[in-house]
Image 1 (cartoon, rainbow, N blue to C red):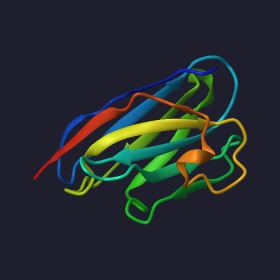
Image 2 (image 1 turned 135 degrees about the vertical axis):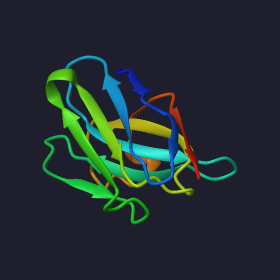
Image 3 (image 1 turned 90 degrees about the vertical axis):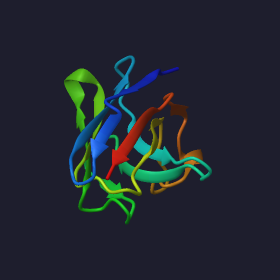
Length: 123
């Protein structure tokens, strides 16, 4: 069992940047994804990084603005959010997959989830 703890959420102005962190307990390395859920909407895929950090993949809505990365020494995955847009506000969740057999865009690709961190964008 791994525990995932997100942090870094808060209020950001449109056009500005914010970095979210997801710290994983233990030393096991996982494929890691970020999802988000806005009020009244389904949780949607944002980004994924493979276990070996070889592959990253992004939702079209964030491609070119968001970057997923990992600090292995800290067992922490980051989501750098640049050029925040009015459609970005949501609770952002990180997730871990023991084995990622697909692209990582589906929630059922993942085995563990964090509690989420709120991101708000002001215009």
